Length: 93
Image 1 (cartoon, rainbow, N blue to C red):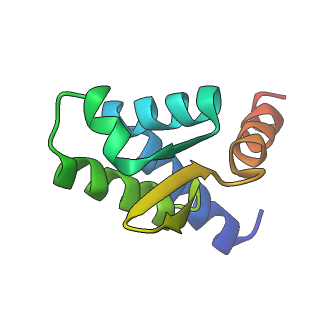
Image 2 (image 1 turned 60 degrees about the vertical axis):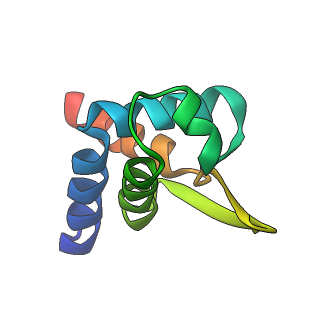
């Protein structure tokens, strides 16, 4: 594994280590695409906090964002989780 790949894996695992961010990923996996404002009904944190968590997930390459008028909708980045799962499985042998 290259140093660059290891660095991006570390960023992804750090992003997933927070309970709200892991919950966001869980909801995106179940529902596909969700607008940022809809997460405030799911979590007991403010909209700015949700936005900050989504930014971390986006910068870690785990989610993608699509603007729809004034709202931003998020979805899981294609292959991001399966790539992490594959590398974990390889470590487990």
